[in-house]
Image (cartoon, rainbow, N blue to C red):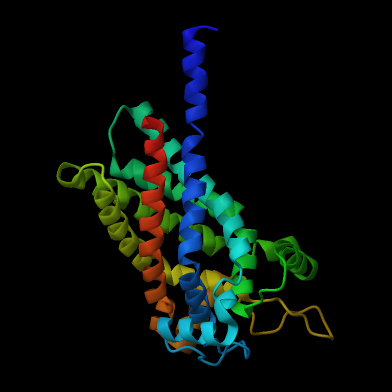
Length: 305
């Protein structure tokens, strides 16, 4: 076999590394921060006037939610839906980060340019939207398991239940805001991380300290930009389309879509309702990104050993 074929084969194999590393790092970060995601979800769905089950404000904030869930449901309650979350990261995380770094490399090679911010933003937004749309069913099941706190129901049973009562559309409920949220997070988070990392390189080098600082800065930006969309996404995913006994028309409390959910949320709960769960979102995104990027960078460095 010629040297050129060997090099080409090696390059093709290496092209898979961002996907594998992205998936593995995403799963590790998810396992470490999932209880905060559960509190965020519970806070985001409470206070909805049209859903009597969730109309009452059960939790006053992140800490109260953590304590109440731990006391009433145990540690298992904080990890309700973890199986779906792991499956989601195995698909969403793998596709998102692998696609981003692959697209960025292709774009940089094609236009013979360095880390151009515009290219990074476009590549990140595309990667986020595509990966989240594909992984949407796992997100729907995760949200519902987190809200109900069910720990004895299998992942397959939950998928089956959604499909049986709501069909394929039920599995892709909220896909619009989910893709928008993922595009916003990726477009803010990934370019900010890469930009901050490059600027800190002269001071901190390619070290864990650099990865820590860069990921923390990236998480703040993505939390501010994505929380309103995340609230809408969570509420759309959690709602069940219940039909009346006399006809096929759905009950009136169901949101008709993203815009209707946005308008009803602001009308009934005020503008600040769009930032419900912001604190646990930021508190989760910070550690999540730190764990993810440090894990990702360490996996990358295995190539040089």
